[in-house]
Length: 176
Image (cartoon, rainbow, N blue to C red):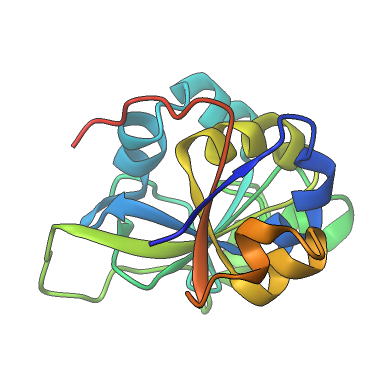
């Protein structure tokens, strides 16, 4: 496993990667609410007020306590989006009924726990507000994409791993 220690001022370089999706190691088989508030220690008020649009495996999520995050899932988080589409996709919005056919519904019978990795996508204001927290914890980035951001960097150019863990600053201790 290769760890790349990103300079503290490099968040702007990671903006496009957060939109494309980065790997994040989590405790899987838990609710989306547990992931956001307990595992990632994001304040519940922030989750309810700032993260207005959530997609789990490309489906909008309204009910955070019942949506279960499994290994290999893709989670997209966004602040409020403008227009009719934004109003329709907003969690619990008045137009949410227009998307009943695509809204996330837990279908898995099993609730396999353990460590796993998901793809996390952040959009708009959440990149600047949450991105540094994820970089401090560690994100997984394909070596080819990291090499594009930091061309010729010896810690990247000489590595054979397909994914590299990126950490910015001192890594906080994470609950197991």
